[in-house]
Image 1 (cartoon, rainbow, N blue to C red):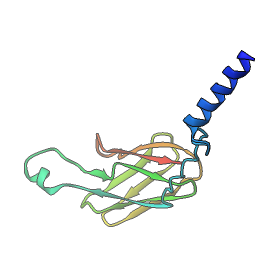
Image 2 (cartoon, rainbow, N blue to C red):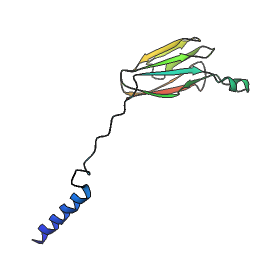
Image 3 (cartoon, rainbow, N blue to C red):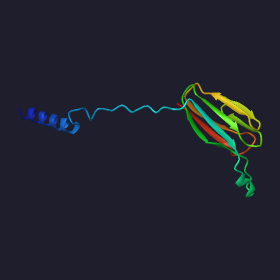
Image 4 (cartoon, rainbow, N blue to C red):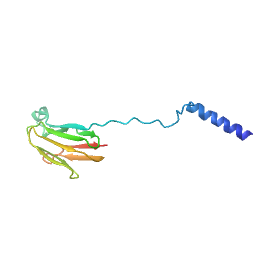
Length: 128
């Protein structure tokens, strides 16, 4: 009888803690909607160039996220040629001033890329 009372007391404590309504149950986490199209600008900060820095450009934003099946479009807004080359060989684009390069990502993953013409100019695409 004593064990039955202890078990009943434990059950009551669990029900009180969980609030009878299942508060202890795992609640679904809302899915984050990733974009299906993301633009990336290739640009140079003229202020840094005028200040004497050896600055050759940047991808802005440097890191982007896109849904599986989505696209990223790189737009060269600089006055120099640039490249968009993935380290894994998945994509390779060369852009003159005013040109764009678009790639469709069909698989989950992390895709790092860079501009082979300018050291330190790199970015990453997260596909989920």
